[in-house]
Length: 293
Image (cartoon, rainbow, N blue to C red; front, side, top):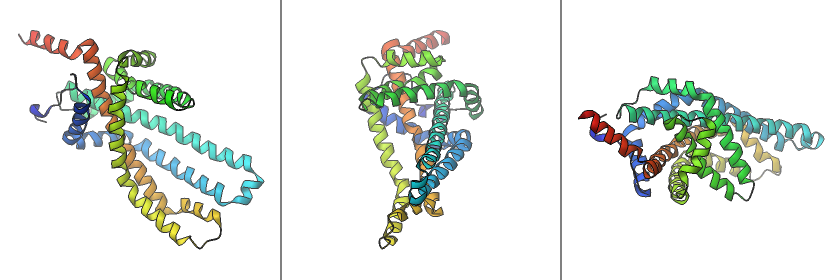
């Protein structure tokens, strides 16, 4: 990559610049960025897709077989919740790997001035996987616990803790330090951070809906063929349809990969707040000028 295309992360940005530079970074690095993510996250993503398929089959079995449901509700719902728990656990592991691949790619991008090294990214991911997984579990538990109370605490905590992974990567902090430092760094800037994230997530969500269109079309067609069916549970048989399952899994995979885009925004937010409060980028440039002289 040419030096004049290098995007400087370590500087202050307003809301518009963060959003613009997020998509500029994707536009310039989409091939190497997404390829890195797929190579690192791919095996676990396929495992998550398999769990999703079994979960959908379990839903179909539960609601399409009313007789079994009435005879053994405890056993059936226990099976359903076990698949839900498995899906949640795999998702946490998957999102942790996605965060690591994305953030260590950006770290390598910064360190090499625009020429990220895949082997370095992969090594860093494998080296820190358990630390990231611990942070992912902690963030999930705290955010879900906060969401129980009318969602507002969950939204607040989710916004604050969105910075924790960047702190862990770029400051090499422990799980506890990354967690607590998130609250320190975002102090006085929560609304600006929330504004950037909500805009980026809306844009990514709209883009992700494109991949859901084939699934929705197929689902509507199937519903049309069932209009004359008097059995109300017949609809749940759709979850066993191989075409529907394939379309759903494909949509899930593409949408999940798109989730890496907001992670780029959190890095820009992290460096923006860090520059405002600590001037790390400015001090680094001064040190480099002194070294060059």
